Amino acid sequence: MCDKSYKILWTSSLTLAAAICISTTVNAETFDQAAPNSSDYTTEVSTERTPSTTTTVTVRRYLKHQLKTLKTELKVDANAAQPEQVKDPFQSVNRKVFAFNDTLDTYILRPVAVQYKAKVPGEVRGSYRQFRNNLGEPWNATNQVIQWKPMRALKTLGRFAINTLTTLGLADPAQRLHLDYEDESLGTTLGYYHVPSGPYIMLPVFGPSTLRDGLALIVDRQARPQRYIFDDSDQLFWLDNALGAVDLRSSLLDVEDTLQGDKYAAIRDVYLQRKKFIIAEKQGRADQDVSFVSDDVADSAPPSK
Image 1 (cartoon, helix red, strand yellow):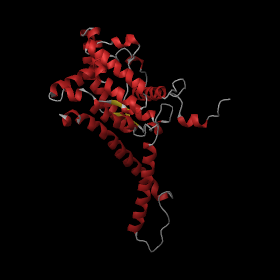
Image 2: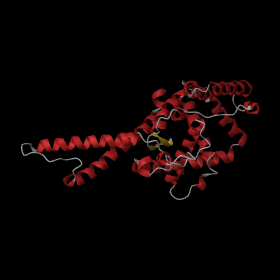
Image 3: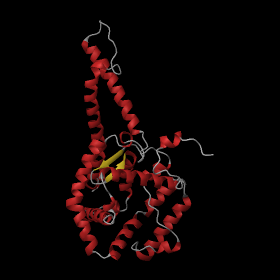
Image 4: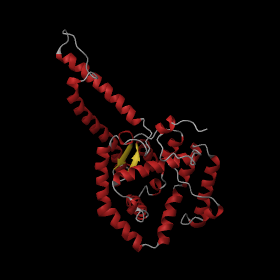
């Protein structure tokens, strides 16, 4: 069950590896063209050295440069205000993955979501969405404990207990007691502790993410109660995943027309802005304009008087 249920997620994780390989190949071609006239990777070699020795020195310098470049790309804390080569160094691969996802959405997911919204009453859709959210409350509380927010974790567990005991999680009576829902994930928790997001990546099927959030997604998926509730039934597990995707897509139908121009770039920047704001809010910095200001720009700005 575990191997089957996470096959797609592991495939998505390989996107980053593919992006790195392609990026390295492109850089290698550039290097080959520039090497004869460049002093960055080659040095004068004495007459005692053979051509093979010269090639070895050149390759070593090139690989060292590539490793340094890759480390810089992976350490970036991506946000929408940064130049594209900083926040999205694997854009050529990401756009291909986006085109694949967009095709799936156009011919499969969106038509099903339209029918789902038209045929299923809003109360039923809302109850199903609330039921799924309620199942995630223990993991939300776990992340809040890791963030060292025990009172928030207690409120989340209180929500879970009240909603489960009174409505089996199909409604949200806890909200009337001012116990509001707070969505958490491991990626957000890592961001709370200032772990850099890494470059933006587009995952097959799962959509926009970053290196940090993509790796954290594997843990998030393992922590979902459905993983254990439906352990003996592949059909129910995949049905829940498919219905969850359709329900999420149906909730976006009313806002999809707001995306104008380059849809890939718009989705990327909205994702990065929203993630930055969520993390800042949990850090108590929601009143700052963190969603649109680059960290580099903010660091170089003069202090306010």
